[in-house]
Image (tube, rainbow, N blue to C red):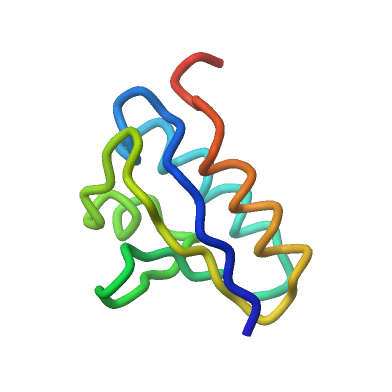
Length: 86
């Protein structure tokens, strides 16, 4: 299963707005993508609520994984962006 470790780029971490943007993008993919804090159980990236339960703040490291490498890379790229700035 492809896994990419990334640093959270959003200024306020993976809270409401960034989580919603990531969840919407993940829901449009043809494969399931998971996101999690290393050492903890990963959650479905298509759920903003579950993403927010990670408690990942700006600069924290998270792991994005899934069956399709391109889908994992797409979600990982979003996590790295400052989605609060858009």
